[in-house]
Amino acid sequence: QGPPGCPRGLLVSAAMGSGSGVLQAFFLWNFVRGVTVGIAGTATLYVAEQTGVAQGLMAFSRGVGMICGPLLMSKLLGKLIWSGESQYGFGSVLAFKALCVLLVPRLSQAWALCLCFFGIGAAMAVLDTFNIMLVGRLLKARSGAELAKYDLCYGVGGMVAPYIAILVHRHSWDVLATVDLVMAVWVIRRRACIGKPTDWKQKIRNPEKGVATKNGSMDQVSQSVPPKVLRAGLSFAFISQIGSTSISAWGFAFTTKRFGFSEEWAALVP
Image (cartoon, rainbow, N blue to C red; front, side, top):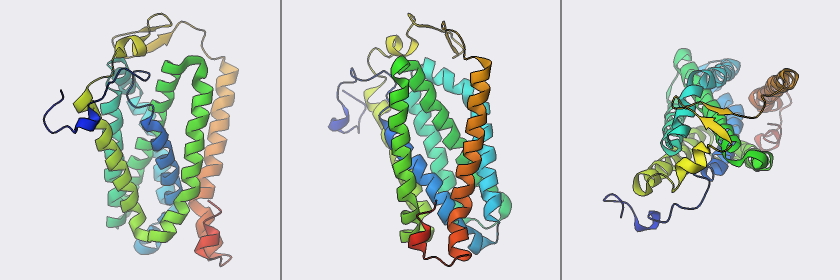
C-alpha cells in the first residue's frame, strides 16, 4: 500500500535494479540533455534576435554554470547517494532546470537571461556528475559499457533538437521545460509511492568493495587515478567542450546568416 493518490500502476516491486531508483531514468535524461544542448545552439538565435542579447553571452553563462554546478554540489550529491535519496535529488535538480528553461523566452534583460542560462548549465552538469557517480559506484567494471549507452542517447537527442527548434521556434523552450518537469514529477512520485528501492543500503553502500562514510563521501579501496591520466582526461574534456559548445552555439546562426542556408539544412550543422 502506498500513500493516498498513488496510482496502482506505480505500486510495483522495487526489489529489482541497482538500488538507486534513477539509473533507468538517466537514459531519458541523457536524451533530454542532448536536446537541451541542440536547442540552446539553435533557439538562442531566436532569443538573441528578439532581445538583442548576444548569443555568445548566453552560451558563456551556461558554460560558467556547468563549471560551478558540480563544484558547489558534489558533496551534497555524495550525501544523497549515501542516504538512498537519489530519486529526490534527481527530481529536484531537474525541476530547477525546467524552471530556468521555462523563463528563457519570457525574459528580455541580459542579466536575467544570463542567470537562467547559468542555472541551466549548472543543473545539466550536476545531473551529468550525478549520473557518472552512480554508474561508477554501482556498476564498477561495467561502467564503461553503460556510459556508452548514455552517450548514445545524448547523441540522438542532439540530432533531434535542431528540428524541434525549427518546428516550434519560440515554443521549443516550453516543450523542453515540459519534458523536464514531467520526468521530475514522475521520478519524485515514484519515490513517494514506492519508497526507497529494496536492499538499497547493501547495493549503494557496498561495504565489501568500498568505504562509505556518514558525510556522504565514498572512498574506494582501490588505487586512485594516476595524475598523468587525470590531467590528460581533463585536457581532453576541456578541448572537446570548447569545440562542441562553439559549434552548437554558432553553427546554426553562421550557416543561416552568412551562407543563407535554409533552417532545415542549417540544422544539420549543430
